[in-house]
Amino acid sequence: MSVYKELNRAVTGNNFVDKNEDEYIYASLSQPPIKIVDKNGSDDRFDYTVECPNCH
Picture 1 (cartoon, rainbow, N blue to C red):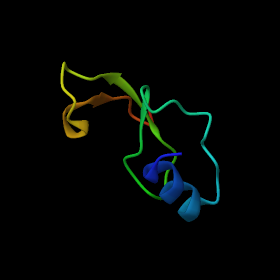
Picture 2: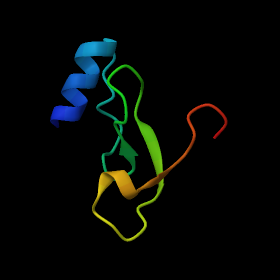
Picture 3: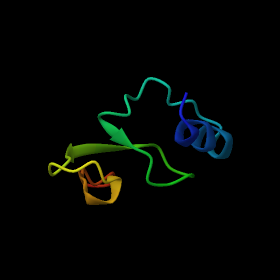
Picture 4: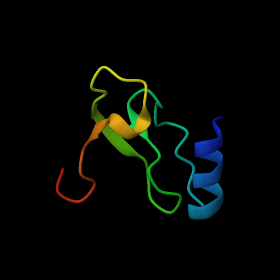
């Protein structure tokens, strides 16, 4: 399990182990992971386009 998943689980009390890290990004320690829409041809996690968790 990744460090991101462990930190998120420790803070939220939830276990999001079913979320594939190729499809989701942990953008906040206190919120569930966010779906990646496009990686924009980059390996930089700050360059990804993600789905809005509120309005999708």
